[in-house]
Length: 380
Ligand code: UD1
Ligand code: UDP
Image (tube, rainbow, N blue to C red; front, side, top):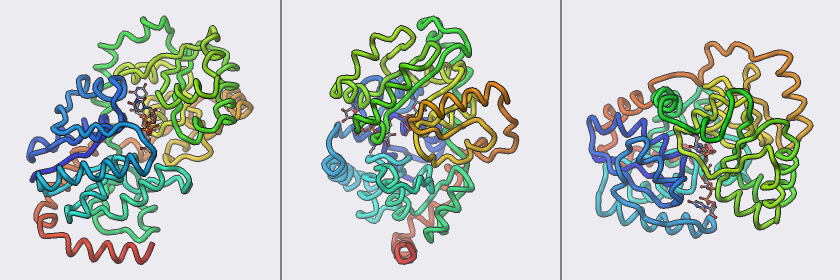
């Protein structure tokens, strides 16, 4: 089969790396980078570090408001699809690149496979939630990481083409952790001792784009009682600067604001951190896999499996909740997490297997799938 993988943002390169290896054994895979992320630290570093094939296309779309960014992607992706005529388009996660890839493909009657289907925060003001819901409703193959995501789809009337395959980021982590521990020099470079520092990442629009919320984040950063490594996403850096909050943070002795780090460095930081404070979906999961306690700086999480036991706590931007949870954890320690469904290896292999066996069905035309799509939309 000829397959186009559409990616554009940091976590998608990591998800792509595991699946791409499997796909390339049997199929011709073309990587299309929308250019949503373009800084070296958010894009190219992952391609060189994770040996993902260089994108065959980079649309260079860059940053813009949602409509403009997604619209420009749609046009660019469609041109590539018309030229390449692939049998399948694969999209990853929940960014604007995901939605644009899915929409461009179904409009050209090309079936779509969605990696990380069925995730829901149930918050429709979150741009990612809109991207997830719409992408799932036009996909023919829905690769779910967890039983909860399968249930979420069922509630929306989506049952055809749904596969519980496990989490592709677990594959990536398992494959790269030992390499990271050998290669990464980040602990020495930042002069860190294992379990004696905190790691913070923040980039969600709801935390960065409102001054009041960003101020609450700063209050948390100011109050932390240990060395704190803070790889700053460019969105966050821009907003801290715009709201005149950056200078105060730069003056803090215990805070190390740094550029975003490579995946291998990130894995090492996550493994060695005493606590991780984050609003990232991927980082929450990696904290769970690595058994580092996580405090999620959001009001909800779509990765509910990480809440079982006491590995992850949803604390919003409340310093009080953070301190209370840290105190509780100091006393109780981490619980056993045996049998947690999030830790299921082989997602990439399973997805590649489903894609190979669906070959005939996918090539059979979209009319059958369009009918099932109609049914899904009616029941939604
Ligand atoms: C995007 C995704 C989010 C995902 C995150 C992963 C959407 C709506 N959001 O958020 O779901 O979790 O990627 O990191 O798709 N910028 C740069 N350099 C870059 C990229 C961005 O400076 O290489 C700055 C620009 O000022 C831009 C801002 O960051 O306006 C936001 O970038 P954007 O891609 O729109 O959203 P993210 O916050 O990165
Ligand atoms: N990540 C990274 N360097 C960083 C921050 C994050 O390599 O400085 C990795 C992290 O290990 C995880 C992924 O990026 O695999 C998460 O991406 P992000 O937080 O940007 O997006 P989300 O998962 O929230 O969509």
